Length: 123
Image 1 (tube, rainbow, N blue to C red):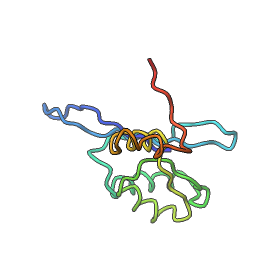
Image 2: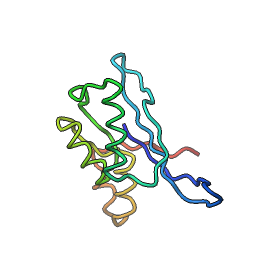
Image 3: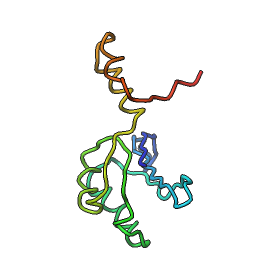
């Protein structure tokens, strides 16, 4: 599972927006575990390639990656095809619901979300 969010960082007296990339895995015992976290200027193929190279250097078997849950960033998709060609990429459900709500007319949202579970918003 991959998560990313923007964070303001300060470098050399300049404040800029960087992405915080978090990679989680499901262990053999079914527990979620953070296996990598990086601050990067974006999500290009080269950035994901460096992360995946590190995983392989640490002993990850590429055949053991079966499913990746994320939004569909082009750089991530390209790197996945290279490093984990057998893995299936699925769009995160909360992202699917948010996208459907913001890009679909109010009368069509229930039909678009039919069959997709979304998390309720916290109050």
